Length: 318
Ligand code: PMP
Image (tube, rainbow, N blue to C red; front, side, top):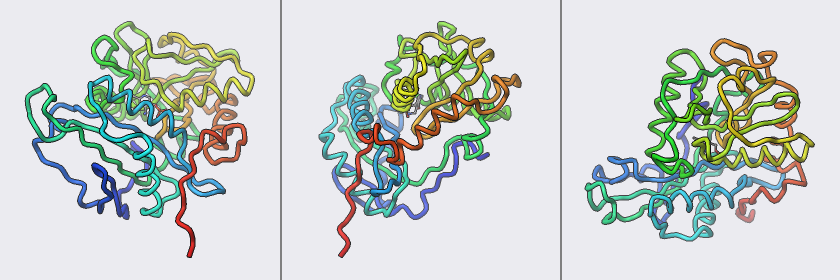
């Protein structure tokens, strides 16, 4: 498996930058951009899926809401309204000719000062879209992935607002995924300062034990995932008990099943932790059932979750 999944920027024609659609090749910025030096940006990861009624963006409203919250937590005021960003995403998807794709809005402190305090810097906003396959591999979705607890501690909510999806926070994630993949694992799990499981480098964590589904929350230094939220709802609708609380290493090792959730990773089973099988060491039945409903929902085939999809307006055929 190629870590990060199949991704290509080939054939992406357009991007959006500060209010304008531009050719992909023109998406450049100055080396004195504040965010390049200090990680002072925030971003989102959103997926658009092909449905019978055309491409539709999954859970756009909560992704946009988190984007603005992430910015606010760093005192960054976005100079565009959510509706403008939504329109820009639709335009990019249509003009790039995409159906299934990944959408990456980013807002960052731009060119102005390289003092640490970004007060003098403009807030630049851009949106990229590209094709991105299963983040932990197609095989990961069915067979499950192998993980380790990494030696790096998860950034704690007393150090940074971990609920902000901020660029600089991902240095912690980069160390985690590098350590795990260098040692032959598919993904790393970060533990926080309190000794509680936090999350993967780019995914939230769920376990299943005795038919009960458990996951943690923001008090465990996690990003509050939107896929996590969707999966909690799906699990409850399927009649499972869902408990939210701290998780420890042994909860994962002794679980019947475990899985990751994330926009990129979708719902990916965890089959092994540091050489120990989770449950039977394969995708479990509860995970499979949740995956099934999740993929029906994103493809617009689950009427009950239709309001999770924002259709992308298609050009009228002439
Ligand atoms: N945690 C981290 C650190 C992430 O990067 C992501 C991916 N955005 C998630 C959790 C999952 O969040 P979501 O389901 O909103 O993509």
